[in-house]
Image (cartoon, rainbow, N blue to C red; front, top):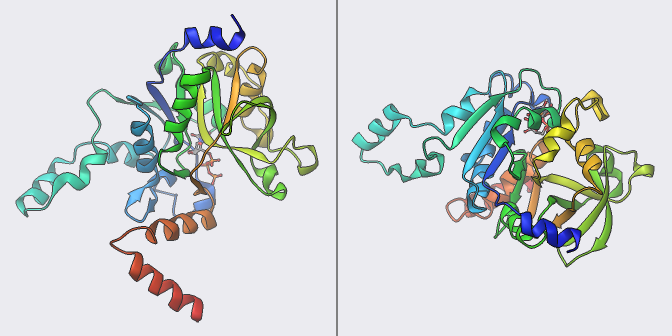
Length: 299
Ligand code: UTP
């Protein structure tokens, strides 16, 4: 049996997803002083809603939010709002607009990251809930739009190769130093490439490629042990990329190239781009928005 077929035999389904939402969102201050970045809306849905919808499409059952100070609005968003529902219903309004915010009782779990010490530390905070299962990770400020969604494509790939998977995309070389970057190995298929190395925020001249990690992961539970006691990395934070890099060689690791579109909503320009792009696709507002954009551009 090869390493890869042995992993296929051991494969467990992906039922749980971790959403690290304890960051401070400093790039959006002062907007994010009292409102979590993940609750900023692209038109009429907060970023976290897009990520949760993507998770559900991929068959994820349990949602684990790693929260911190000032993040209660995220949990409220997925709670039942009795007064609101009663008022809407008394006014004869359609309540189905709230359907995406409904979660099966028991399927939403929160854990606290008391101090935002980095993405790796945030994931480690979920170790007791993740337990001994492979799990998905979503960074909600990376907005992935496609049919199928990014995580669905990753779960399909996981069902073929097992092990660990990360979604990647190509960026211009001058941008690599802001991201986790992969060293690509053998190409397995159009969408799937082996990963032979990972480095967080490399200098442009040291970057092993221009393929960056784009906010979606499927990882084996061993990553939690690797994160245990890990030293700080780039930016003085405990980096998930460093833990993953240490697992390469002992477990299969693949990169999935997402066929849809990605918007970096952690940056202001990316956020505006996502808003305009999605507005131009909405039948209820595309004409109005196109007219507004034409008018603004003509000024
Ligand atoms: P980011 O670095 O994009 O988010 O982390 P940030 O730190 O909140 O934003 P800026 O850079 O200050 O503007 C990616 C994701 O990881 C979470 C964030 O909430 C975000 O969803 N995160 C980050 C944590 O949960 N804990 C951390 O310690 C760091």
